[in-house]
Image (cartoon, rainbow, N blue to C red; front, side, top):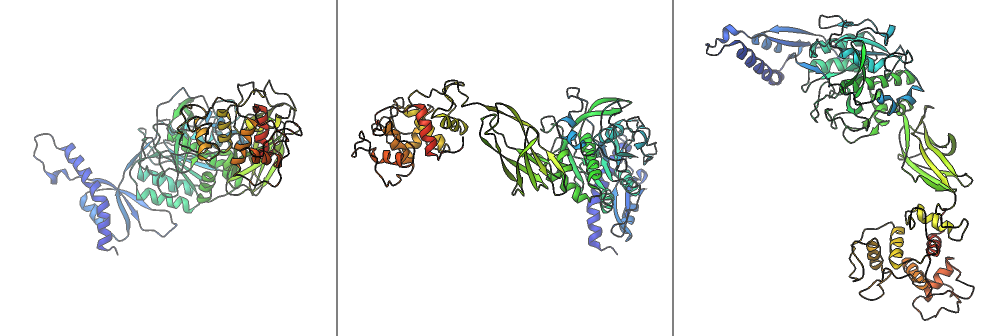
Length: 632
């Protein structure tokens, strides 16, 4: 038996709605200046009465027209689970927008790769709870007998919305007419719950859900909603989920973060709308209560022809079609498993809980993406890295469709792979990664291009010159881009300002306060951060207490001192024997360091030439050797 507290709680949820309805009825029925007579008004209300049932049973309810006393009688009945006003929701339409190219939603999202796995199956039934579905050659015999909960005919779609939604989900492929749905071989079950004005009573929606589940639907598409919830609708959705039926709903076209129902009901896969750049359409609802985003504008069948249609109404059936492909490929899955497959394979977005639906990754249940990389390289080993998501047990690196490296059992969402391009001829190569799932499925990333060039890429460097590896390494590390797009100027002297910049970039461009007190440097010059960093590290104090001489050439003795200090004044075991190195000079131990580390052997076997200017080619070589001669 109901306790007074439970009755009070139910009153708190129903009475405000009754009060609003009474105010509307009384206002509408009382002419201006007339005497109000509440007994004669006798307002009656459309309420939904839901019976108590055992868990897992189909919810039973009835719509009743009654007065206020009748509502209180119903609420006091111990066999009644809930009494609520029969609310309305709306279909999520937006004006057509002809600027969007037809069917971009398939071309930009990986749908075509998903179709390489499957086009769906007529055994997978997508129930379209909407305004009806008009028969058309796009559906053929995949349009199953439906029903209406509005007193109409499910095959007569006066509004056109339901037919558009059905075509987005499952229009045929290869029939030389119209467009293509996300799951072109899936079946459609029309359930008419919307009237010709686009209004959907919660009671009709709930009845439609229960009916569709009992008819064997695998997926329910709900392209309607409102900003108030309904316990009757929640009960019907819970019934669907207990039968492992997947429920997908539009997030709404309100353009706000306010939750929308049924999209925000537990277990429903809610879908917002993204554009061709994967940004949110301004009209799409959004927020962390929304699970995913999908294409919001597409080609929809309406009144016998295709037009551009926009709205979260069409993001939902596109997602439903992807789920149809998934169920065809993977077999029966629970709603939780389907939601996990969609979310773990989603490409991240910042305005919904996870990201946009990625059909290829969903079917593969795992996907990998390459990080951005340099577009040119020399013939040498080239490293690649990236992220993966979902069920991934192996990632292959493909260059021109040939596997060149394999990462087995990648961990923590990252991978690293290498292409040994040492023997590669000059030319442009296509690079992709392929993810393997534990189920044996695969998914390819989008393709990127890499150009292999000969030598350094500069017109003024000599192939196989002593400085070639150093120049290539400096460019690859972002330490320099040359003196122009086509020149490195290997014989030009390096200025002190340039050296400061090169060392600072080699160190990783650490943050510094670009103020040194030197009177001959400018705070806005390219070398300002490098000079400030060198001073802060104790590598130099300038040429005088107030000058750095940034335009002066760097001498070989100065470079030796700078590198030795950068090393942390590494201890030396053997002194060099150059005849032109004064053992009492500030740079003597630094020269020893360069020789002992194999950075230089001098200008001759007996000379170091400490006062000579360092050329850019020499600096590239010294710094490359100082770094340990990394592969370039």
